[in-house]
Image (cartoon, rainbow, N blue to C red; front, side, top):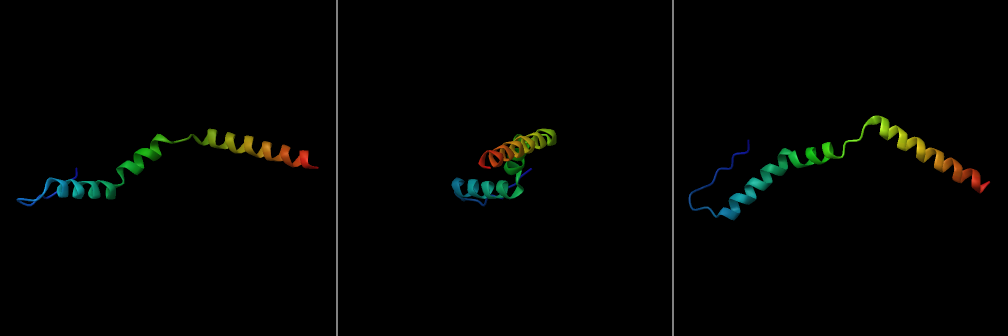
Length: 63
C-alpha cells in the first residue's frame, strides 16, 4: 500500500504528483503490462521457426 504524507495546507495537485511518483517507482504498471503481453514459450518457438523458414525461402529464391 502506498502512503503519501500530506502536509497541512499542501495543494492537492502536489500530493497527487507525489502519489504518482511513488506509484511509478513501485513498477506495478510495468509488471502488469509485461504480464498482459505474456507469450508461452511454445508460441515463441513456433514464431521463430516460421520466421526462419521464411528467411530460408527468401535466400533460396535469390539463388
